[in-house]
Length: 457
Ligand SMILES: Nc1ncnc2c1ncn2[C@@H]1O[C@H](COP(=O)(O)OP(=O)(O)OP(=O)(O)O)[C@@H](O)[C@H]1O
Ligand SMILES: [Mg+2]
Image (cartoon, rainbow, N blue to C red; front, side, top):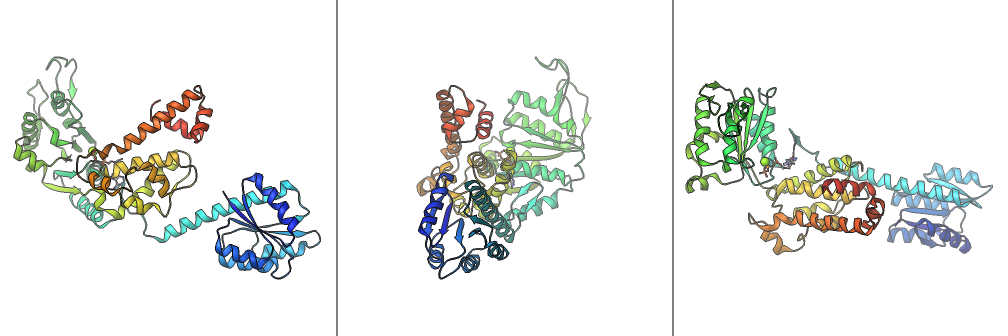
């Protein structure tokens, strides 16, 4: 609720103005003199000052210049009687936002106040942007956001390895940006005009993975009704990204190794050798040395893939990047949802820094998406984030979450589940009327539509 300071030596006038402002949803505080008003202004926060010009003691003009010295952003509207327009013009020259002639009509005063408050908001946002500009600029390298020392070192590694055909192994916890790094390696290589072909070794049943990789001829096995080109052939001249390589079945690892050694593939069911020129980038969130010890990953393949190693540290170990990433995602989601570029409020970074981020950048991205959905103003602050990040204040939960594999990864989905249920309930109560449901939920219709789409309701 915006707060208005009303300054007039006439009690009746103060009362009339208060009554006028009330239906506008504004909180007003009356003051009988310039001196008192100045004290009040120093002690409390106001979004707008309405002041009479002619008062005993400190005049309206004097009050205006004192206020402007204290807070140049707060709009001051002066009230003046007919016949003294000249003084009003003087006040404008000194920085008053507008003037209102007494006796005034309600519509004019409403309009002027609304405009003044809008200006106030606009000025505050601009100031925030300016303050932000004075901070270090956001570092972006090939879609990777983050200027921390660790990330700078990673950008350097990418730059060094990209030009050669060297096999690269990217390791790191889930959501740390391994795929983005793989793409950066490809984009900065001479192969960038050929294909970057990703293949997720964990997402495809192992018996199909072989034909995904090498292709097959018609009738090679039951179900192989048509000939199929493998990813190796597709990536010829470009880059093959073997995602989640740690999940590849042991027997297939031997076949992959052979192809890597010889640079030749054979489609399943054919013995026609096809020469391919493919750079292989692979990634895993598993600890491959343990897998080698357990006998589930071939050591020889490991050395073939891991000619050059890039390790992405978890987000909690690159604190400096958290706020920049959060702001980056908020801005992008805000725009996508037609809310303009949203801002991260000044109190948010400290809260984000205290969370362990078991899902790393992906989790932060999802959080910012939810925050953008819920945000009705221009900023996302710590209070809102606290609602979305259960356990942020409880230290034990944070400790638990930092152990790998903890359940905390599901915090995000728990919040989504609650949100989903609330939406369904509101729709039920509102007989499927979206406008009514949005009202019940206290969100805009646009937000509700977005959520319905998102949750596929
Ligand atoms: N430094 C970064 N800057 C901007 N976005 C990032 C960054 N790191 C990760 N992301 C985003 O976070 C999400 C997860 O990244 P990515 O898919 O590359 O992670 P991953 O390490 O491959 O995870 P997983 O092991 O689960 O496959 C993506 O939406 C990606 O765009
Ligand atoms: Mg990935």
